[in-house]
Length: 243
Figure 1: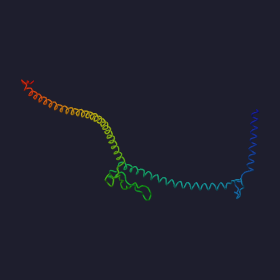
Figure 2: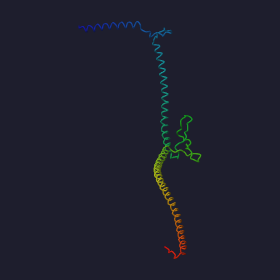
Figure 3: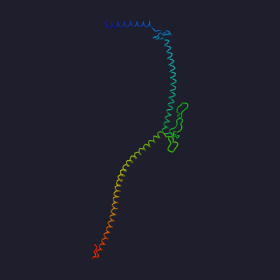
Figure 4: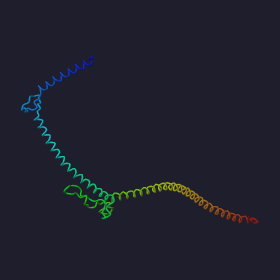
């Protein structure tokens, strides 16, 4: 036998002796599992017995049964409410379609007041309340019933397109206004210049007209003086001939 084999045999013997000693110690110091639990327990001790374990198992079993029964009851409630949710989901989808376009079959407008079921506290999806009115137009006391959301959206899109078109036209007109303002400014400058020229010409015409009158009067005066001079010279001899 080799040294390694002898070592293994020795370890096996030592392990066997140790297990035997632990078993004897566990048997001699075994807990009082089958004893009745004592009414008074020393401080720092927590004795365990099968009767305590059975009592705890029974209590936990009752709690589990109660929780299982409650779970079954709550499950039935959840199943019922899930069925109600699916039913109301379809009805809400139908009401949503009406809210978008209205109900053309019975000529009903889109938006109506909600009717509450007094028993459940939920909205009664089978009934329609009064129609919701929009703001009154200027000069009127009541408004018209609101159209569907899609109808209003289409109208908004149409109005938006018209606003964009008017804005483009306004932009073009503003550009045209600036061009016309420049033309008016240029024309007004020309008009003022022409007015000044006309005024100068008028003044010159009046001046020349007055000057012509003075020249005519001077000419007549010269002719009169010449006649007088000729008459005065005629007494001295042969009359002076006219030029």
